[in-house]
Length: 294
Image 1 (cartoon, helix red, strand yellow):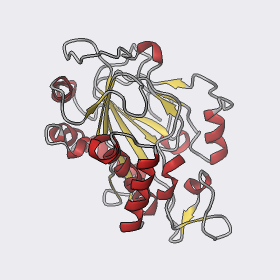
Image 2 (image 1 turned 45 degrees about the horizontal axis):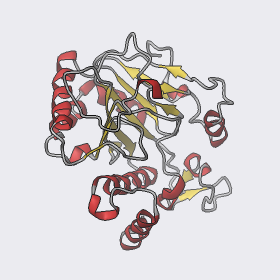
Image 3 (image 1 turned 90 degrees about the vertical axis):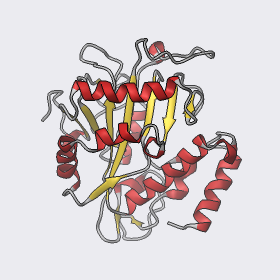
Image 4 (image 1 turned 135 degrees about the vertical axis):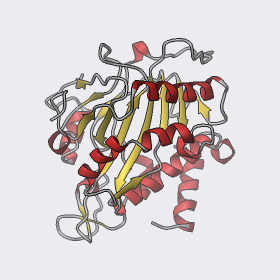
């Protein structure tokens, strides 16, 4: 049980204290904010519709940011927690959904393979009858033919202290347990209602949560929605570095391929002009799966 009174094994979310020191976070934050302020090639202000602020995807592949990613990825305390959650230090790996969010607002969602990206669903998922799963949401709660289950987690490191702030993660614990609870969370009919639980991580804490859990970021009132916004690192911001880890199995392979393609579509303007969900994107997905099937 962590200091917030939530536990990963039952609630799908936990807070790991002190994965980095405050000084380490400040260095990491300076690296990220300098990249955004300098107009880095992968900085986007209108990713996934206009949610305000600034977004950078695929940060583990961006030369200027790899050191910042490695600072978090190298944390022994983080990996002790992940090893416990995923069945051993050799049982999991970092996946492709690794991103920076600054001053954006978040709507309720889960970090999973759904919607127009359902083509990336794990092909080996089996339903209760042992047959190939064909339920777009329910397949995340089935087993693979080798008995493996879904185990993919988001690691969120906030770049500012949120002890006295309600603008970090809002979550609906236990909405990861099955498709019914996830849908109830989206429609606010679960035990946590419309607002969910507000977490208050300290500088250097990491929030780890099951990617199936319903969650959101800060609300619209605190996002930077100025259409002419220019990033000024000396001002107060709400930043987040998010990394994804998954147990070594077909569900993680599915998640990896899905978000790798989404990152390419958003970040590489020569593919579909930054569009990630239109006809061009769907054609790119079909081509990707045709040339390299799951």
